[in-house]
Length: 131
Image 1 (cartoon, rainbow, N blue to C red):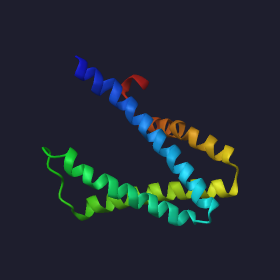
Image 2 (cartoon, rainbow, N blue to C red):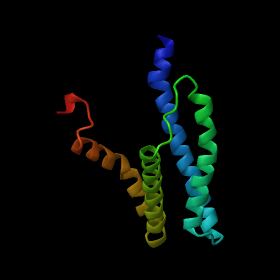
Image 3 (cartoon, rainbow, N blue to C red):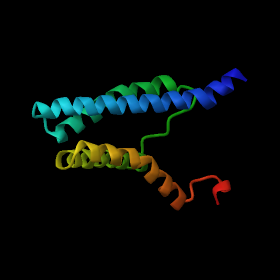
Image 4 (cartoon, one colour):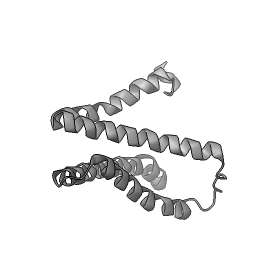
């Protein structure tokens, strides 16, 4: 019972806290780097490179029992599309921060869960009790 509660309630909460903390750290690092004149294109490339270096070894430690799918073209193309989507999203956010105010950028980033919910309703990804 205790392990089930841990995996069902505590781990997702800790994951959300970790994601928010990492977003705060990335924003602080971006502010410091842009104050010194670093281009946000380069900053995004560096942050994605460091994230890949940090996450790729985790797959070998966390997924041992389940076999990894073979690296074929459809999987690689989906991974590249996913990376491109994240890159373009960060690029738009940092360009908007450059052209707008930090308050506007913060407000838009706080609205992203609402946009996700609206898309989930539109594409019918929610459980049947919302229908």
